Length: 199
Image (tube, rainbow, N blue to C red):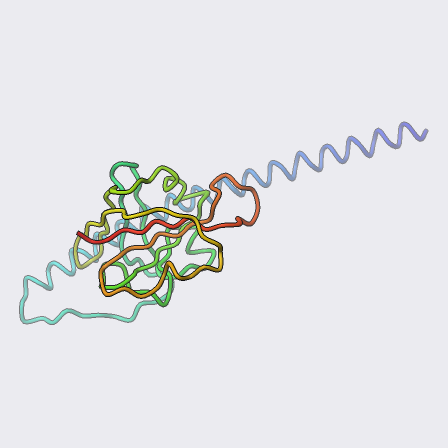
């Protein structure tokens, strides 16, 4: 009798774990599909921004309109040709923003502006490719105002609370931030930093 009850509990436990596993895989799959679909939509939005900006510059008498930036707005896109890497940059670094793309770190200059612009991304989605980046790699930054090219100066790992990598600069630099190690399970103990200068 005791053996029969134990067998039933084990069978129920096995079924429960199986269902939880299927639900977890389904959630991850849906999250990845949502992110990919959003990237397509956001890239279209960026293309529209570029066309609007170009049409305004053709009409010289119309001053450039700089609207207020809200969380989640599409700010631009990053491409790293050698890695086949491409991702849209959104305003903000809240969890939802980083699930859908890379996020502009508030308090740093906007992408493409003079200064040290910080961009964050998840190591297990969009910024996974950064594990293969090297000094001298080219990073292309597309915004509505045009295309900027950056060259990677250095790559290093820092403590999570080390914000000196985002210190102000008088030059146009780009700082990419993600968690490290790339294949670590759980909260990562370090941050992986890529610094590039505009050329």
